[in-house]
Amino acid sequence: MKRTDLALEARELWGERAGGGLPAGVSAEEREEAGCRVEALRIASPEGAEALGKPEGTYITLTPEAFLRREEGAFEAAAVLLGRLLRELLGLGKEASVLVAGLGNEAVTPDGLGPRTLRHVLATRHLVEARPESFGFFRPTAVLETGVLGNTGMESAELVKAVAEKLRPDAVIAVDALAARRLGRVCRTVQLTDTGVVPGSGAGNRRSELNRETLGVPVIAVGVPTVVDAGTLAADLTELAGIGSPAPEDFGKHGEEMIVTPRDIDEKLSAVARLLGYGIDLALHDLGPADVTALVG
Image 1 (tube, rainbow, N blue to C red):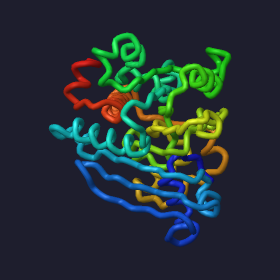
Image 2 (cartoon, rainbow, N blue to C red):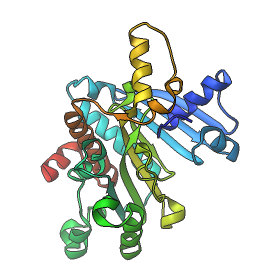
Image 3 (cartoon, rainbow, N blue to C red):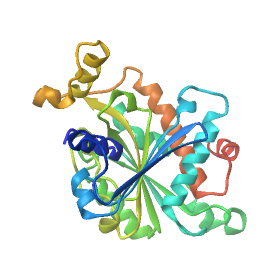
Image 4 (cartoon, one colour):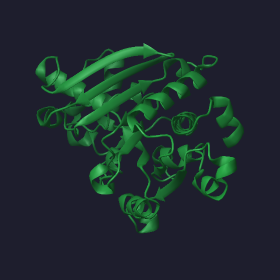
């Protein structure tokens, strides 16, 4: 299967081969809400998981179209919707604690989604423990920037597992950059899933998994595609030029050996990281967007 971390694209690939429809045990729905397109995919059988190459679970793809058009009030509406979708996936009680892990390497801009998102996430665990009478309305939340193996000598999964064993959170939210199969989805879609994440998979550098099985608690993965491979770029540009409609696979191994990111990736990543951070805060705490702005800045 061509490189993609998006379940939505895995379904599209299967449909291209099968002539449409959905695999057995897979359901999908789509709706418009708050200026966003929401596409939910549920894989409920081993057959469906094998067909799409994705673990069983729920995958929600959010495309914040009004936010991308920079319409007035669209950021706040998209953040509130993202927060609600994330809260529903978590399914936690009000006092349950959460560890938010930002994966990736901020020194490599397309891989910096996790660290940049953490800039907008409220760390409250220490406040709730020290002054419950003043900060007890917050959910106990810890924030961890994992770094990368080459800089720390530790895999992200090892670090998150060690911290989770110490803090014993009721759930983990892992934020990581993804890879897409279509240029039009780069920095334009958000994927939420309750199946966890494999750090580095988007760049073809798979590491140990972060999921319920490895950590012992629910792991919600939040990601945004920041790269495509060269085959995808060539296929999309060829189609736009009216020369033909090749598939990324048609360019063979040469199309897989290079990954590509937008020229303005820094600006795009900053905007989407802020959206993710606000969404996480709104999911975890009884706050509104204005409250998050006042607290995070």
